[in-house]
Image (cartoon, rainbow, N blue to C red):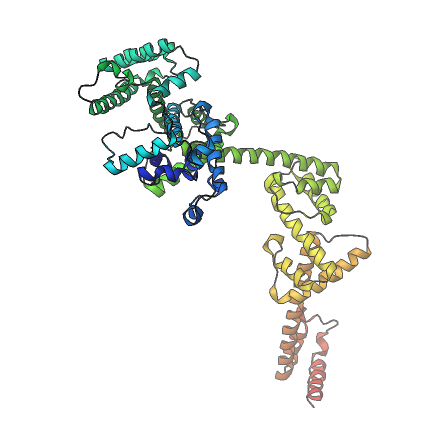
Amino acid sequence: WMEACLDEELPPTTELEEGLRNGVYLAKLGNFFSPKVVSLKKIYDCEQTRYKATGLHFRHTDNTIQWFNAMSNIGLPKIFYPETTDIYDRKNMPRCIYCIHALSLYLFKLGLAPQIQDLYGKVAFTEEEINNMKTELEKYGIQMPAFSKIGGILANELSVDEAALHAAVIAINDAIEKGVPAETLAAMKNPNAMLVNLDPTQSVQYQDTLSAAKHEKMANARNKDVPGSPQEERDVYEELLTQAEIQGNVNKVNLQNGLKHVDGALEQQDGTALYNALKSPALGLRDVELDNCDWYLKQLSCDKQLKAQEQGSKEPLTKEELQFGVDQANQDGHRFRRMLEAVSRINAAIRKGVAEDTVTELMNRDAQLPEAYPFAAELYQQELSTLQQQSHQGNLTHAELAVAVEMLSSVALINRTLEAGDVNGVWRQIQNPVTGLTNVDDGNAQRYVDELMRMKARARAEGNEFLTWNDIQGSVDQVNVVVQEEHDRIKAIGLINEAVDEGDPQKTLNALLLPSAKLADVLPPVAEHYQETLIRAKREKAQ
């Protein structure tokens, strides 16, 4: 049963007692049915490397205590708990085994674990192993409680009248034998049976599942019959299903039906139907919130699609997968609502006009915005206020804020690097795509930096603390224009020189009149004089 829960192989049966002393398997069992109380990261020596190397360490008792905490969390009565020393010091190991057996029935009743299987006829011990176990048990000097009493103790904890309970349970077993689903359901509805979450639409499934479980139990009981044993010594529940077993099978049917309803809602992409399916008591999911139904639909649809891709299976999501998806969707939903609240506070702060308050709200993690810098509070206030006034609704959305803050933070860094005279830093920020500058030419890098340095100095002299994004883009555009004019002028001068060399006054005049040459007062009537003067000047320069 433990191997089924933990999905790993345990030591041989005869060595298990020693293997439980370090509490690792017990803590892992606690993680299986109560993962929020016992996380795998908190299990000391989880891979048992220290235990295998140096034996028991006092910290191994922490694992046993975590197991106790997990059982307490699900409500297993403390009458079943062993002491830490019963396990660590082997003072009373049978009490530990007794507790595991009680826990298995309790978890099955809650629908949290499979039913413990009868190992009679499936596990064989040698005569030597049996003698060894008998010798070990005799060392304790205690009498182990009979397992048949476990159901009774659990019933007492629930304050149920034993006679009425047993009568109701026996009546259910009789109805199961008759094989009529309606009669079985009627017997199960008897309040004295203390069964919960009965769904009338599942009567056929209840009948089939309970019948199979009862027949299996009867077959096991017959295999254990000892010839010649008195009939009166037999326990009625050797062949009949107990209340816990009936409830466990009801939970199992309800769980499968609940999973199908969830799967159907996901197929239909119906958020409301999905919410109702997730709220089913049969699933026992925690923290399912109506406000997050759309988030559940999005998350669980993705989970189902991913499961189909990875496993090639169209099986519904399991209860554990659903709980994980619900938890993730809750986190996303809560984070989204906190983000909306933060955006509302940001817009209010911008309208209020206090720069320090605005940047404080921008830096709030709930806002989920790019990093904002307090030293540039006035820049954010000024620019965001302008954007807010231009907004149709009078409010900036999260997407608008994200783009604006990212760009303004880059502008703030450009201003800071300009003040520090950090040429390389200025160029890095100009190139940064986040800054959003257009028409940036690598060949003009030094010109951009020089121009921005001059602009920053002028702004400071005029009492302006920051260059704005428009200032920076304008500077880039201006440098590009100047550089282009210089290139055009150089090209025009080349054409003038070629015309002069050809000796054609008209061609020379046409070249001199090119706008890119930026020459003033060029007069066509004196074209020949220009030609003569320029050719003479070229010859003199050559000499």
